[in-house]
Length: 114
Image 1 (tube, rainbow, N blue to C red):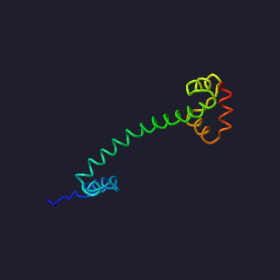
Image 2 (image 1 turned 120 degrees about the vertical axis):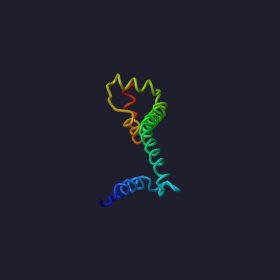
Image 3 (image 1 turned 180 degrees about the horizontal axis):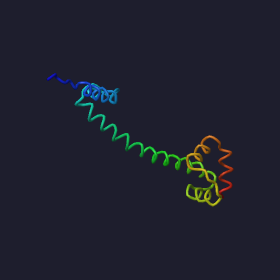
Image 4 (image 1 turned 30 degrees about the vertical axis):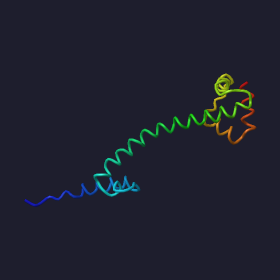
């Protein structure tokens, strides 16, 4: 009976694993025993932080909007309530970009919400 070599799958799996850990420090980029848990942990962190990024950005937009409407005589919650009542359908991301880059346009929006 001939000998069956199954190295191709093992090599393919190992190569794929090391490609995913490329750029990591110390042995995690070159040693299978260290690369496997590093890859799994990196995946866990990436999954978690994709959600945390959304939270952090929304918080940033809220802070920017609050800072932009305070000199105009409003606070964030009253501004958002005024937007809804005025029927202005801009989201926080767009509003914070407008507040940051186009102050005159943002001032007009705030006047409509009062």
